[in-house]
Length: 292
Image: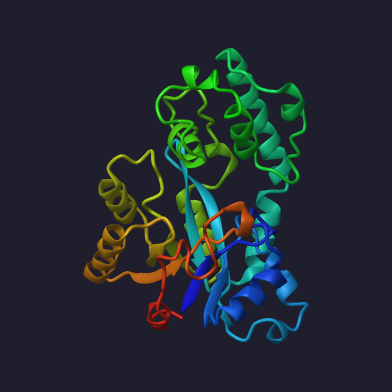
C-alpha cells in the first residue's frame, strides 16, 4: 500500500517529518511522497538524517504547488523532482510573498468584507490571529460560525462546512468574500514549467474537490486539453467509488500515469488517516510501477 500525498508541518500539516515517517513505517507503506505546499524543506531535513532509522520504504520526492487558473486557484503535484532546485525556485519566487505575509493580507480582506456585510465576530478572537502559524480562512471561519446571526447574512450552505466556505464561496468571484489570489501564485503553466525544469512529472491532484467547478468532467477535460500533464491522482480521501472509477477509466483511455494519496494533514484534517484516508483507500503499488 502507498500514499503519495502527505503533508508535514513544513506546510499545513500538523505532524513533524519524523512523526510522518514513523507512522508510515507502522502502517507498512511501501512508497510515500511528502508533498508540502510550495516548498521542499522536508527534503532538506531528510538529507540530514538517517532515514532508515524511521522508515524503510521508498520516498518519492514531491511537492504540491498552488497555482492560478483563470480567477481561481488549483494545485498540481510534482513527483521525482530535484528538490534542491525546486527549493531554490521557491525561495526566489516567495521571497516577498511569505506564507505569513499572504495570510495576513487575506485575513485583513476577510475582516473588512465581513464588517461591510454586517457580520458579527469577537474582536479579541480576530486580533489573536497568528499568520505565522495559522491560515486566514480557517481562523476566520471558526470565529464566524460561533455567531448564529451570521447564518442570516451568509445564506445557503456556506457555513455548513469549512470546505463549502473556502472552496465554494471564498473561491467564487461572484461572492462578497471572494479573494483574488491569482497574482500571488504562479500560473498553471508556470508551475508545470518549474516541475519540468526540476526533472519532474506533473500530476493533477484531487480534481473532484473544487466545489466551484459545477461541471467537474468539463473542468477536468478543459485542464487536460490545455496543459501537458503526465498523470492524475485517481484515488483521494474525498473521492467516492464512482469518481475513482471515472479517473481510472480516463487514465486508461488517455494513457496518463496514475497516483493516489490520502492528502494527510494529521489533526489539521480530522478523520483522514495516513495511507487509508477516511478508510476508503488502499492505493496499490502498481500505480507507481509505470513511472517511478
